[in-house]
Image (cartoon, rainbow, N blue to C red):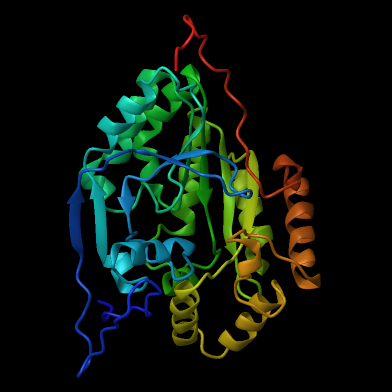
Length: 338
């Protein structure tokens, strides 16, 4: 087990310091009643407006996860707290059903999920994501799923039915071709082969599936891009997109500490490559959290992605943005007063 380790929070005036070695982090599950299910997104580089997050925090433990800072809003840490203190929204499916039943709702695309993985290990027990899919099937509401977990294959029946009724799309996020490296930086995620097998099974069920290489970490996994795209195409993926790593605030501290512990000889070179993306910064605050990246090295990564994706027949490799097809709104039978 990992010892408790959290960077200082920008939202808290205090910081815990241990007199001796910190104790090991243990899984803590907190159930909560959510006031709402749908979250509205207005970021210019997120290709959907609405998302549902059944869980806060994520057991996958990806060192680079940009969502780590969201735990600081809960007076928790972005380090081991994010991975070991999981908030479960037990009523999320019921809230989603109520919100989709509102007269003003127009069957807009919903992403499961926009922040933490909807198919993290606790989903096996709580089944909240499956229940949300059942709600969307009943309402004929289109859904996109992005996950690093092979557990998504459990819900192929619902995804296939939803795609027949409205639309469904699954992106399997795959970061490393080498599982040895993956275990160091994303310790609780599925193996690469398990993710490719999930793509194969989803495609066989007639549900559109794509591969998301996220994040691309210059100097570390950019060399994996041809292998990942080729394997995804072989497994039935039709789409491909990618995002550069971004390390806002305390996320940088978590990532760099784990990178240096896992790959001490390469860590300095990788950090330098990441800084090259944004003019020497790990995350450019002038971009407002956007995932843009620049520079000659990143241009080479982009060309590698686009060339390989075109060669293997994945969307022509034109963009990392994965906008789903629009869905026509339900007809309004009566004029609304308000």
